[in-house]
Structures are given as C-alpha cells and as structure tokens.
Length: 241
Image (tube, rainbow, N blue to C red; front, side, top):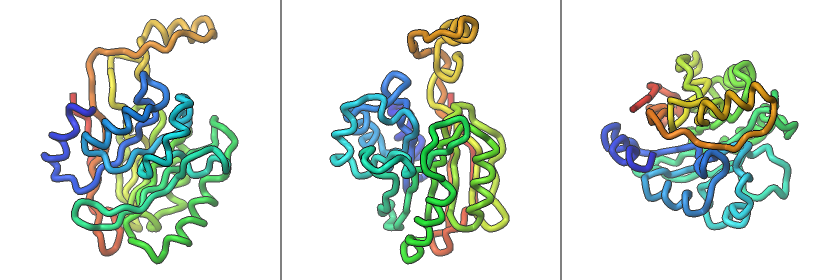
C-alpha cells in the first residue's frame, strides 16, 4: 500500500486520505512504526476495528498519534479515541468517526445511538463527516447507513476484507459501500494462506496466522463531497493490481 498510495493520490488529486490500518502488522494489529509509515505515504487519518489492540504496545502510543482512531463505542479506559476533526490539504474541515458493529462481534456500546449523540454535538462543525463502520453483518451495515441517511457525507464499511459492488449515493446525499475491501494478497482467504485457512475450517482448531503474498491488490473508494452541504456527489470503487 505504501508503494502504490502516493501515485494513486496524485492521479486522483485526492485532498484527504483515510485508511483502515488495523491489519497492518502481519495481518493483526498495528505498530507505531507502521503508523508513521502510513502517515509518510500520505494517509491523513487511520481508522481501525476489533484488531487494533492485538499489538499491546500500541496502547501507549495513541497519545502520540491523534489521527489514529479506534472504534468510538469501545468501553471507556480502552485507550485512544474514535473521532477526530482535521483540515484537508485545501483547508476543508473533515470529521472522521470510527464505529464498530455488534452482530457476530463483541457486545460493545450501540453504534446507532452513539452516532446519533455525536452527530448532535457536531452540528456546529463542518458538514463533511465520514464514518468507517467496522462490522461483520451486511444487514447491520445497511441498516446503519439508512439510519444516518443525509446526516453524514459517507459511510464506508470495513472488516470483511471482500470489496462489495453496492456503492451508491443515498436519496439524502450519503455515499455508501458495504465494504471497501482489502489491500493485500488476493490469492488467499481474506489475506491468509489458503492451506492454513482450509486446515482451520476442516479441523476446527487454531492455526498459525500466515499471510499470503501473491497477486497483491489495493482496494478502496474514491469520494467527492460538496464542502458546503456535506453531500456526496461521487463514489467510485478502486481495485488496483
């Protein structure tokens, strides 16, 4: 990703870059060194999900990286924070919110209600609001998007590692896709060596977490947002070999 991203930023003339980095460290978790490398590659805000705490030392580093987010609906005391408002290269204020779903995942606070509370508080800020909704269930992601239709600029789903083909702009102007996909080896099972994943399913036992290396792709989404209204005016899937 760090090799391809600068060129992609130039080709799209991207004003602001958000990336989910929770699987950066050999497929699980993130390190301070990788956070610095992602910033250097042009990423403005790093979101995450249920694997963000897999590398324990990172908990002590959150204070050094204010633009590194963990899901906002984690319990107090988890470390880090789940929302940040920063200016883009052109000076537009953009709020990025990181939330996690609950279906087939940890029973943390309700992302629907937490989003409502935060959006009420953010009314006086810039209308450009982006949400990374890290969730397993496609139904939960779609319901979340309809619940916030017109209240945020874009909701991009993460977690399943498989890019979906349902990108759209909702009736009230919110850009949406169920999952942005995965940056990694496509000759794999969501990033794992196929033989490892197969053995795990057949034996129902834990297996070494071995990352696949072949047929690398970069997945993502390109969004255009009206800075005055906060409405999404274009959404485009990206999948580059």
